[in-house]
Image 1 (cartoon, one colour):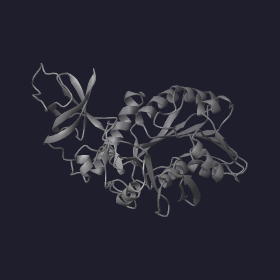
Image 2 (cartoon, helix red, strand yellow):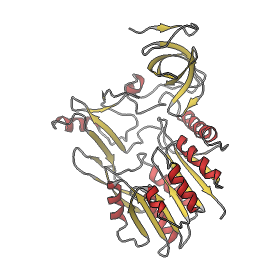
Image 3 (cartoon, one colour):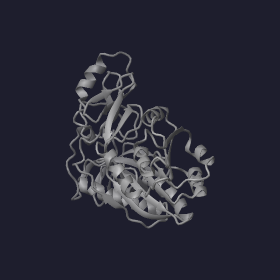
Image 4 (cartoon, helix red, strand yellow):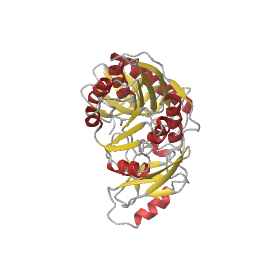
Length: 400
């Protein structure tokens, strides 16, 4: 049974399942907003700054609590009705912001990136928002599901190991027919707990691994990529083209230069960097994921200016003595101190840092700026609408 705790009771102690009424404060990194109750900080999902909401407590630690909005007492002007019942029921953690207008979501993401740069990196820099077409729905071309005990596609609620069987998804590409995949799954035995990865290729064809390898073909500005469903590929249907445009506009690569594409994946950026440096230059793609390496090796087998190296990035950098420019596209954990120190030792004149996590970008930026680099530009692309994730492109330069 749920206990209702009055917010003006100074002696109250929160427990999981309690419901408390709070006034919601600022946005925090991670898709939630900050509120307070009896001296306890609560990270609230499904709210907006300035709202008065009833929050159900999902998790308690010594310092913070986490909860989700169950009733809105005073609504923000930015609030809208979510399209997805699973979001409304707090049954799927795939989305964070369906209750807010897409315009407001983007304002919040600018604030989160700027706040992370200031609070973590000590850098006062407001990012520029790059417009991404669309209303924030039906954009995902890659989806990961879990097979439920009933043999159907399922997703996890936020911060939960539970499973919710789903029959539709508001952010999945329209071509992903979940009911059809569920029918295919029901004919297989022993799929419970298996990861089911679904992808849409450049011709809008659906690929589902279902225990076998699948390869998808994508055309990005005339470059053809054959990408395994197990390899990383940006999920937003416009992401590859838009990020390559950012690269072409920002990376000042010249003929004959030596450029590293670190955490280079299947070689999306390498393909276009190699055009910049020409046959007399060199592009070195470094990646540790075996599936991505195989795709990259196949792509660049006949391109003499490109070397594809399977390696840990730090280990690779430790054996290098010169590089002109670097493209850095690490996972959410960021590059980290060891990699950043190696880059500072090599001192490339430009580092183009593509980040999917504002906090780790700010942490790494702090070290680069302390070493003499200047942030020439910081642009963000909302390539994960209705979620808390955002892609940032930071351009670091140094005189040498």
